[in-house]
Image (cartoon, rainbow, N blue to C red; front, side):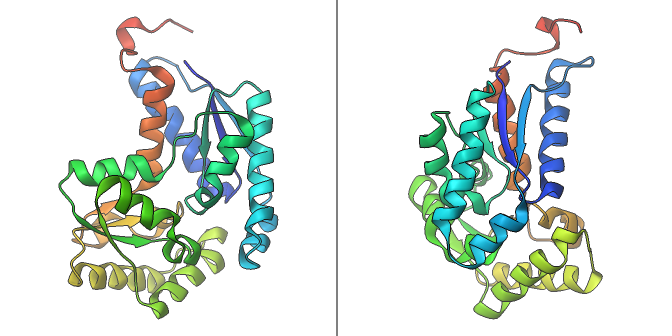
Length: 241
């Protein structure tokens, strides 16, 4: 089993989801009381968020690259960034650490293609929706057409994420507003919608909309565990505790 290096803290809530999901998947694959080998370095989200809002992506890159390098020194063999927006500086983190990085867009794009989707809606922070790193990778690598909400919808979603979800505030009014945004993207031709902010699945679930939803966090963790364990790992060959 390879050691997964996880850059977290962005936010700590979503880092809990990453840690839990990775371990649950390892247990499901290996059985018994097996759990993942995970090295975690959690950043102070206030520092990251401040730099993001100021457009200081070099500062964000320094923070993430430093964390990734520390994880490599701690024995990590595979790198995960536990946030969608942080993948704007993913290449820098991979280069600084020398670790193979599983980009969150790739498992998401593969799943969309596997399900036969051609046009997907993209929900996330303003940075994820408006900067090209997420959309262009989906378009270039997977041939997908990517739709985002109108400007007002993007601003409201960004507000909900930073003023509510990062504080564990799950409001019905915001749930309905996000569900309406999903419906609007479907009306524009989206076959499915990506919840490309790791806190969004706490607010909106498949029960809240008829439009298919994809959760990049779960897909990211699933492929990471496949890489960490290898395709042949399973209960029959697993060692006891």
